[in-house]
Image 1 (cartoon, rainbow, N blue to C red):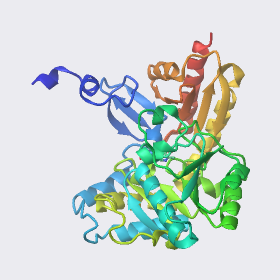
Image 2: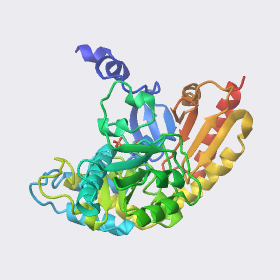
Image 3: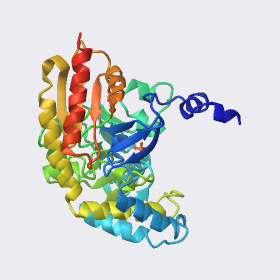
Length: 404
Ligand SMILES: Cc1ncc(COP(=O)(O)O)c(C=O)c1O
């Protein structure tokens, strides 16, 4: 057979669209914090599929939940009830202390759903004149790849050639409550931000930012929508990043790790009056709320309910911070951390971050660059402190080597 003469990466290059630029490694297996390449080499995974693998590869409890559900019922569509959706919604709402859940698949779909909910809520509940609703977003945001979402991105690569874009978005600097306040008016439906901007390079806003937004949104009667698709579910050492400021949004977006690294599963978790703007026929998704995803999501919630993954992320996060503190200005222009999550901006004279990632590959450490100059580090919570110290030591050694 012709296909057998080519390896998987060559076939991908020849037959798939080139919308990614993967590192030159083909993975065939994974367990915990480690993955195996097609030549048998084992690598420590410091990316966790952009935080979709917070609990590691093939977590035994998540795999068992998936197997059990695979053997019973996988998909029903929402034309019928299934026995997993209701418990999943109840357990998720209870975990985060909110009223209810609209299940979806990808993160972008959850964001789109939140935008629709906020607009309809603004027309029906806030009295915003028809077709005028606006959503305030932040510079440097990353909320997904649909045309509406990239339309309010500040990243030219994400936008170029994809217009015309959906109107109704206002962008302000990230981390600045006053800048948001200056834009809130009678047409505003919602403020939509990430508590920590992951794709932008793990940008942590000033202390009090989320509390300030909460206060502002309460005073002005607009919705606070927090996209915790990457920051949520333990990554920052708490269940949600907004737990660090003791607030709850009106609409919370979750995804990635919610599906246990096994299936796509996202959710809009919201106040009841916001969820209630949807009526039969006004919104939906064939796969949203499917019993396989919900069964896995319920096990993810059960893991988080113990508090153990969050504690792990917090204590490993301290190790990560300590290890990175030794980098100094010769290697790193800036280091930012939030729990078990770090962005390391390479010092000016160093080559692009991609070069460092390729060098780290040969040292069996998987790290990915973001925005050319930043290494984003997000290990699974099952990594050990020893493995983490070793891997950060490898990063440091590579940066030392690359120093001119
Ligand atoms: C904060 C945030 N929101 C939304 C998304 C989009 O999620 P998905 O790729 O599942 O559509 C991402 C993906 O990286 C994200 O980091």
